[in-house]
Amino acid sequence: MREGTFTSRLHDPRTAVVIGRWLGAALIVCFVTGLYSHVLQDPPTWLRDHLPTRPAGLYQFTQGLHVGTGIAAIPLLGAKLWTVYPRLFEWPPARSVRHALERLGILLLVASMLLELFTGLLNTLQWYVWPFPFRQTHFWLAWIALGGLLLHLAVKAPEIAAHWRRVRPGLTERRAYLTTVTLSVLAVTAVTAGQSVPWLRRLDLLAPRRPDIGPQGLPVNRTAAAAGTAQTPADWRLQVVGPRPYELTMDQLTALEQHDSDLPIACVEGWSASARWTGVRIRDLVARAGAPSTARLRITSLETDGAYGVTEMESAYARDPLTLLALRVNGEVLHADHGYPARIIAPGRPGVLQTKWVHRIEVIA
Ligand SMILES: Nc1nc2c(c(=O)[nH]1)N[C@H]1C(S)=C(S)[C@@H](COP(=O)(O)O)O[C@H]1N2
Ligand SMILES: [Mo]
Image 1 (cartoon, protein in one colour):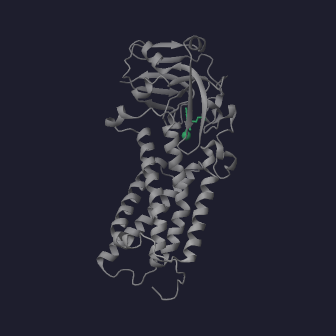
Image 2 (image 1 turned 60 degrees about the horizontal axis):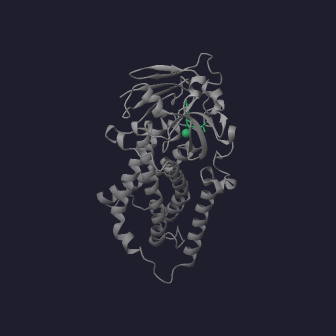
Image 3 (image 1 turned 120 degrees about the vertical axis):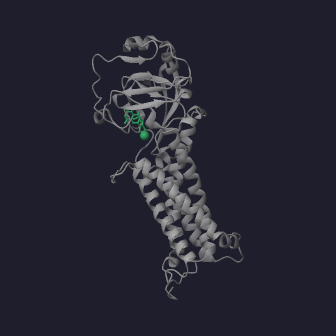
């Protein structure tokens, strides 16, 4: 390193450790909640029967944390990089094989972390500027970043241990710097958390959704116009396919026993909103088709070319008394954008699986 180039006393290990702790904590929470979201959307066979349906708002909570910690990690990563960046200009670039590997690890860590936070942020803004599928990319980058992080922690363990405790007197400028970083984290959190925390919604300036704005007071990701489902075919029937298949008209559906469920829609993008849904229990529809309560279901929408037109529902959700084929929301017939004539609403599930414009329910196991 060229001496005297980087004069701030804050390019020091203690500052790096203090910020690293917060960044590390945010990333671990973000990773675990992200993994949870991934598993709910795409459960491996052995986990299918163990997905939790309670508490009903669990996914709303974990996904709120996922997006919240991811957003908080952005200023923290910036602060961390600023603290350590003089070391990125170390000269000569490698003193030994071990040193070269260590630096390669850092490169991988920083690159995967930046990409991961960047793709996540753009996804919350529904801005898909990349040609590759978001979820798989985000998922694999997370593992690469985790590997890089663990390697980094192992390599730096002695230094981390040496600077873990505060030495008095601390640097005044460090305290000022850390206060600034804390305030930035609080600020970005405060102006986005309103997308899922109702009492913060007036501050919700940066997040793309507010939980109370949209038809019937609920946000919409994909409108009926975009999905090509604004006009319901005149001959619409709910088809239920099982051992004893049958069809129901809307009048027949509304004549069945109706139930209320107070459940949130919790979008993977971080926003969530609760509502009172009214409709027929999925388990009643399934039983009527002669299927057992262990049935897994395939739900098909009138929407034919979207990524979420066909979804699968594990048996734990299908037999849950809160899981409905909803016909109404907050006392009104569903708006086209919320899935008229009928939509799925189930406890503890990601929003993408709460299929709208339902026209077929099929027992698949
Ligand atoms: N058929 C269909 N259902 C769908 C979607 C979709 O694109 N097509 N979007 C899902 C997503 S991503 C979310 S978050 C919820 C949003 O429901 P809302 O628009 O009623 O708030 O609907 C889900 N159901
Ligand atoms: Mo969503």
